[in-house]
Every structure is written in C-alpha cells, then in structure tokens.
Image 1: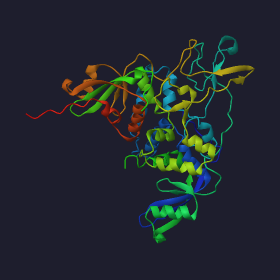
Image 2 (image 1 turned 90 degrees about the horizontal axis):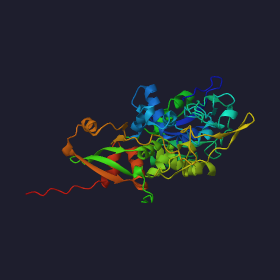
Image 3 (image 1 turned 60 degrees about the horizontal axis):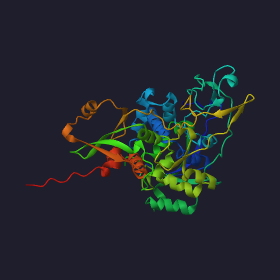
Image 4 (image 1 turned 120 degrees about the vertical axis):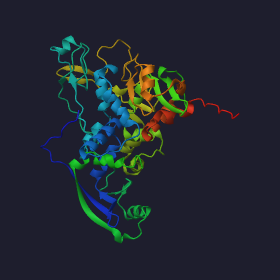
Amino acid sequence: MAGAQSSAKPKPMFSLRLVVDKKKNKFVLAQAGRNFVDVLFSILTLPMGTIVRLLEKYQQNQKSKAATIGCFNNLYKSVHDLSTASFMKEVCKDMLLHPRSVMENQRRGLKLNVDDIEDLKYYMCTTKDFYATCRPAYSNFSSSRCYCGQLMAEQIEYQEGLGCKAFVSEKTLFTISDNMKVGFTTTGFTLKTLESLGYTDFNQLHEMLEVVDHGKIVESDAVHTLFRNTLDRCVLETELMCNDKDAKSSAKSSRTSSTWSGKDFVDLLFTFLVLPLNSAWKLSGSDVVLGCIGNLFESVKGLSSSNSSNTLTGKCVLPWYYSCQQTLLDVSYEDLPPVMNYNGGALKPMDPRVDKIAEGEVISGFVKGGMTFMISDDLIITPFSSTICSLKKWKLDLDDIEEHVIKISKTEAITLLRASLMTSTALTTAFGSLLPKKPKEEMI
C-alpha cells in the first residue's frame, strides 16, 4: 500500500533554528515555521496501526531498536500473522495493516505527509457492460469483490479536492521545546520554557540553523521522537456475546495468562489499531504517559484554528467501513459517502467487507463469526486450537489454572485500551481486579 512520491516534485525542506546546550551537547528548543508544526500535529491524526508501522520502518532504516507502544506492536503483528481465512474478507486484513483515516484529505494538503499510505483510490467491477449486469457500486479497495463475484480492480479516475491545508492558526513562527510543548514564539514563552528546563545562565546556550529534509521525517524520525519516552461506568443494556469471555488465570501468579474469545471481542481489539493517536490518548485518560504525546496534544488547543482544534481534540470519527455494531468505545463513524456520477451512471459506495449482502443484513467488524481466538496477556491473537495445546504453550499445570467468565462494559474496554498503550500485560492490568480474590490460607 505504500506509495512512492513523484520524483518530479521537489522534496520539502524545513528550516529550524535550534537552541542547544553546548556543555551537555543537548537540544533545548527550536523555532520553526507553520509548515513544520503542521507536520508535527498531523502525527496526532495517524491511526495507531500506522504509528506501529512507521516505528518499525524507522527500526529497519536505522538498524536499531525502535520505541514500542505497550501491546500495540503485538496487536499489529497478530493481524499480519493471521491467515486471511480468519477474516470476513481478505480486504479486512489489509484494512487493518494499512488503516485509513478521515483526516487523510487534510494531511495531503500539508507540505509533507508523514503517512506512507497511498492516496485513497476508487475501483469498480471489471465486468464488461457493468451497468447492465451488476449493481452499480464502487469501492476504495481493489481486493473488494463486486456483487457479481468479480474483483473490483478497475480504477476510476476520480480525485477529491484537498482539505484544509493547515492545523495551526495563522502565525509565522513557533517555539518547540525538547518535550514537544509548542507555543507561539514570544519572549515570554521562550523564557518560561527555558526556566522550566532549569536554565538561568544562558551563556551555555548556542543557536544554530538546521535544515531538516524530507527523508529524515519520512523515515519516521519525527514519529520515533514523540515516542522515545514511552518506556522512560456505564454497562451496556444489551448484553453482547463479546462481553462474556473465558479468562484463564494462573492461581499462583494471579496473572491472566490468556483469554479465549469470539468475534466481537477480537473486533474490539483490532479497532484499537484504527483509532487515531490523539483519540487513543484522549480515550485512555489525560494522565496516560505516552512519550511526548500529551504535551503535543495539549499544545493543539491553544494553537489550532477552531475547526482544526475540534477535529484534533473532539470525538473520534472513523471511516464508515470500519463500523462495528458495538465497539464499547466512544467513537462514531463518518456518514456514507455520496453517490458518484461516472460515465453517465451512478455508483453507490460498497462496503468492502461484503460482496453479496442480504436485505437488511448488518456488516460489522473484521474477523469471521463462529471462530474462537486465543489472546495472550500481551495481546498476541491466534486462532484457538485446543486446551491441551494452550497449556503446553504456557507450560502450566492444571493445578495452576482457574477459569473465570468476566463481563466487559465500556469502562473495562477503556481500561483495556489504556493498559494496551502503557503496559505489556494488558489483560492482567485491565481485568485482574475483576477476578475473584482467593481467600488467604490460615496458618495452623
């Protein structure tokens, strides 16, 4: 899905005025123009799956260990490793490995788009005399199948107009601290930033001009920088099948070793990969420590135009074809796109997850129904094989295992999202308190 940018276009360059500590050989703050700050804020709109992919790309380019985000790397790898037979359609796997965003159009209008995903494309059925033999429809995925069963691989030449080209207000210069606090460049803000960093003697500070090229940012250096410090109750009235899940816990360690679950709970976990970074951070609670993301998010409120601020800090909106009947998360989905007029006919948008749909049938989620999946404490998801195989995998005795059925409400879903961002033991952290406590053995 990664698309190469045209070689005919000049690669963008950004000029930064850096303030460095000569004695400590450390970057202190920078002054940058609106275009660079727009790129920084645009990272907040990237889906979590894209963030993971960019961090791993950085690791490959730098041949060094990249920052990890709790259990999200395992979630992403699980999608990659699962066979297409586990998904409703083959396209579902691609939708999660290369998640789309409602903010793509706005990012395309920036001087540099950090996302490496191709621009949104439109496809129709390859069948001849399409309008006469098929139900006229278009899809954004070439691996979708038409209602007639043929691949929708014929690309339609259709180009959306660019969205708003900026996130920040009309200002020429901004100051960025080492921990990604961004403000308008004023004497007061600069002095306050330096004082907060412990600088009273400015003699050890040195100014230098740095030109940041296209390659350094596209190789995910900017994304990696934001995460470098990653390591340093309303219950639903309608009970869902996904709200009941078997949790296998070790009685000796009081850890949730694994979870066995069906479609709906796995769909919830995979929805985490589609959440934009700013929404994942906001839903998890403002006290989540996730590198420099919190500082960048808080900076948005005072610097963005009113429309951009609402987009970046408001309710999470996902593309319509990622819809789940119950996500247990406070998200909404964009409205169905309009009908497209093409070659004298009208094409309706088609959900890529279905090729033949019955009247009134609701399409939801990503994985097939009727399957059982095993989810480890660190959110590695695999198709369930057998109880014996599971016990062998974790090298546990029967005496060490207790089985509990727990119910997950919106509160627990948010707790799980939070744990997935911050820890490598998401199930234990999120659900450990829901397991019955074993009474203490009395000493005789």
